[in-house]
Length: 217
Image 1 (tube, rainbow, N blue to C red):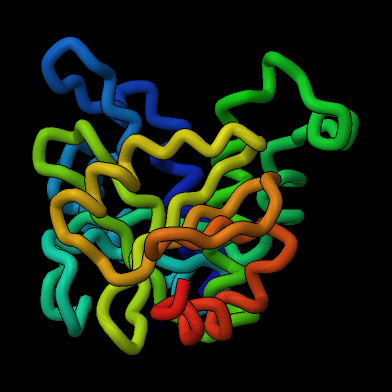
Image 2: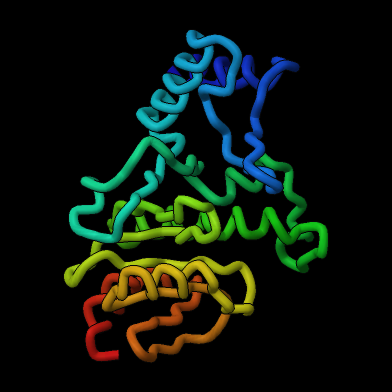
């Protein structure tokens, strides 16, 4: 089963005519679109490969939601992010040098964000038991990294790889949907104010407790 899925993905990677990127306006969209692959049968095979990987427990889909309301499953569409099962395996697969991760590098800025999202996604599932979704505006000007279901409604989560906690997408989401609790997780210290919880990345396992107490922040 695993060999079948990887064989399909490797076949797509080796195709020189593949179309992994979609151009939208003046910006380059890095999303993979299965229907952009030449041939309907090949596109279907690739979608099946994603399903096989997920069924084998090797990867997870995080679905896009169009609205911040309960239940989130009622508002997801056909778009999804595809995550690996473990952040260490992802780094190894990408051949990221340990030195680049530990010491930082100006050439390692973009992928550091991907590793951080991977870590947060697996913590939400494994340590907290949440089923994460994500939200994005139709014009792609804002994207909420994760949205989970809390007792008082959906909870947006912004994942930051640095101590820089400026979060434009979180601000857009809060202004649009007014969630009672919002979470920003990064390398910064713990804080809570006006319905916003700043939770260090290392403390994500305490998220459920923080959300439960969030109505008092």
